[in-house]
Length: 241
Length: 344
Image 1 (cartoon, rainbow over the protein chains, first blue to last red):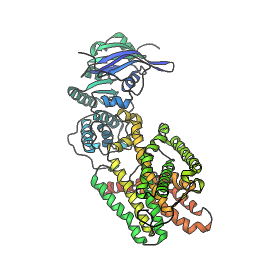
Image 2 (cartoon, chains in turn brown, green):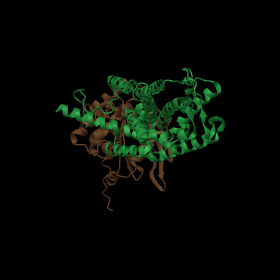
Image 3 (tube, one colour):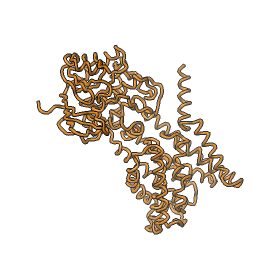
Image 4 (spheres, rainbow over the protein chains, first blue to last red):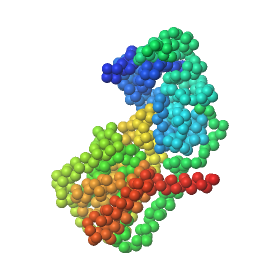
């Protein structure tokens, strides 16, 4: 195997004097499912934003599919095949669910009809088929999360970054979501996810990266990682304050 | 979450923007244009009413053009007077100096504004809401100063006069109804452009950019490119209207062209009253406000200066209070209410 699909090397992000991400390196191979875990404020979402381009790294490099993408704007990265959801869902409130999904679908389907067809398809996949003509502002919180996933999927990305899309879902909904993601993964989609629910992490991903205070503290096989004492301490916050 | 539906059935409720169905668009357009043309037939040769109608068609078209970038794109411009004036000056100048027929003469101004529009807006695209509005308001004032000083092009404060010599090629008519038809054609053109736009990828992207720029970028949309294209379209349609305006009034000067209450802010007002960010809103707004204002001006003009403006202002105030989404929004609301009741 030559170069990894996504490679993050020595990435640093400063916000003024605060070091949000400190010299983080990791790689994701094509077809993998990788989880990033870590306590609140550890820098997971910042790391995501560095990969998708919402933020520019202070140092280090991000390579995707063989090319250096550090300097690219987020829309250029999306066109290269990086899809993402936002931790706080960003629906386009005045548009219907269908129109929201179409905004994503237009990237690979410039014609109205085929964008519409693709949008209907992703909405059905995430279980919003019957809500297609409802304005996003009228959707429930959990429906907005699904819409977020639908819009990202409509891009037909090669790598999708999901930022806590399972938060607040009940057990059966989580199971359905994992089911869908597994199917998509079988279809060739690569996943990089931020997830708090360790059951999901264990069930869904093979490899886990642990971030704490902006630095990578561990990486490896899910079962192995989740039992490491330093991970348990950092992640579950057993530390006395 | 994320369970694939068993059926592909779509709930017919809430037609939302109604942009999807061609039949609906075609029907609306046919009914709308007929309704809009009918008053012209009724007005006959009565100059008073034909004049009001001419202005109504023209400003409906201008509001539709403004609404592209301001309503659908969320960039609330108060600087469209600049494009309006560029269109008016170029058209008049080309006819005066080179005898170029206004039918062709309106085009160079429109094409120029497709470039000038994005150029002047580019530095301000980062601004949002009222900040963008204020910055573009400044463009209008700069334009006014320029027009006053560029004597050789604009005729300075005295302005330009196009002599009356009737003829189809000169777009100068002795029957006032001919102007009304020209303005009607302009309105129809603007509407067709907007309908085609809003059924295209660019239209959807424009809405996405207005709603959330970060989400738009994540969907692969170049926010800047979308704004540039929409501005080019909006500015050139506005310049087209400016050219037609010049041919109708035949006397143009900086005070008229850069007037805020009669030009720059009026586009915004008409769209706001009618329903900003909708296809029909600006047209509805123009059909309410322009005749009302003209009628009041004519009937109450003698009662005291500005009495008609007080009445029009009062009407706008009521509209702002009770129709937050404009007339188009209110109609949409009633329609949905009726649909809802019918289903019970």
